[in-house]
Image (cartoon, rainbow, N blue to C red):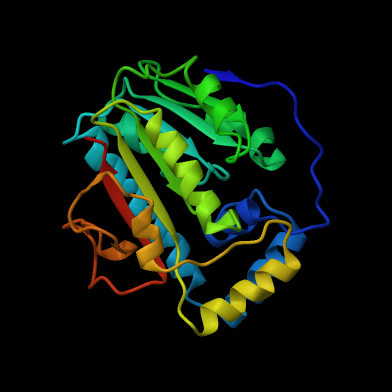
Length: 265
């Protein structure tokens, strides 16, 4: 287990996306300003908590499939967020204890809590890279010190591409990352989607109050991230409908967050 040592200063006067998301998931690594914005957002758009939890459940099912049936043993999770429950390394190493996970984020709170995040299995490997999503060269160079780029890697981009304002830039980032992966690697993406209603209005409030704007996109746009890849069934769908577990209680219901998993030929 390793961790980069420099820790940037933490600004607790401005709400920040990973901390608010942590609050919605029931985590404790957030500040009053994050809770206030999180509550304001939830008052405007109560389903946001369902979206956050559906996104985490989608991550769990996707990683379980990749580490299990697909046999992937390496994961590159960019936009890690704060450690809560059922993080990528916990899910992957729960299936395959020898799995290797590299987390990437550039939020100072995430970096400060990296030691918590790094508690993986003795058989496996978990590390953290401090880097910005747009700096793909740095990410790939640092990740290559821990992952074997001659063997399949699962690239996780959960609720991070919406923070790239320009859609063409977001697609280019995904393309550069996927291009570096070997055959039989996988891409996992989930992001919030346009509803032309209350979710859009709540996001406008978020973007005015927070330090990291988020852009909602259409399901069709999310599908474009998978150009050139083989989409796994059921394709690009609202997260609760991506291979719901047989043990899930109740009937899956739509949320304004779509996800998918694609394989690189």
